[in-house]
Picture 1 (cartoon, rainbow, N blue to C red):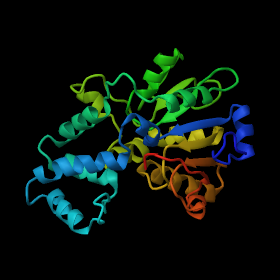
Picture 2 (picture 1 turned 120 degrees about the vertical axis):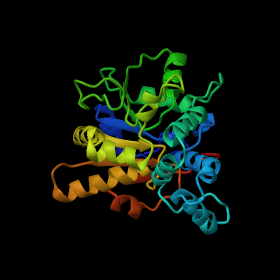
Picture 3 (picture 1 turned 45 degrees about the horizontal axis):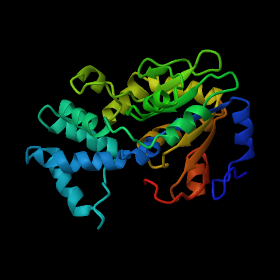
Picture 4 (picture 1 turned 45 degrees about the vertical axis):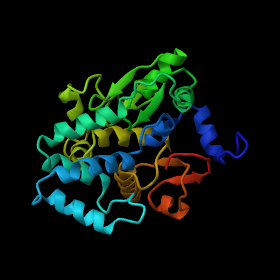
Length: 288
């Protein structure tokens, strides 16, 4: 069903689940591109280009940088290594690497402009409410654009910042979950910066070692239909999630229902192999 001309053909089952209050919108960096923020790939590319050659010449990162530059595509906009692994290499090879990289991330994402494009965030804040007015919304973004949209439109907003997460069910959850953390108000708050899920080590801690992100998501998928917005299936977050989901579905422990809302060219068969049900559409002047 198309709700607007040239819009996505939204499955009727998803519309029905939304009316019943059983849909959670799970938001990635693509929703913030209209405000001038980079997606995860572009953020990592900027950090890699800025800091990789500051490492010692005998470091593994410097060698990786040389290999990357020799092997890059002509547009110089791809990296061989997974993006979260590049962050891990930067943090481990630079002097005061973790502090340096996270303060650079803060500087890049902490926008102070007044007239930001917040229409997408406002729409999601409204769409994500159930019939009782409870908000069920998740993001892996670090920025404060949802908060700014809520203040601009005077929409009440309760926020949960990882690793202190709510129980994702219909009675105990009312608010926005920052699954991978939230930028602190000051770049000097290293404790908060260290809690951001950014590097491969952070992903391992959140999803495997400590497992708080995995536990939240397993309960989320048991209780809701999840609609990913602002991701591609190649994003680090979806690689971790959809591999785990596909494995769990094979064991038939629970039934996960996932829709991927994507403005990118995507192979539907690939999406279904990854455990999701993608529906595709095209928008002009979008961030990829």
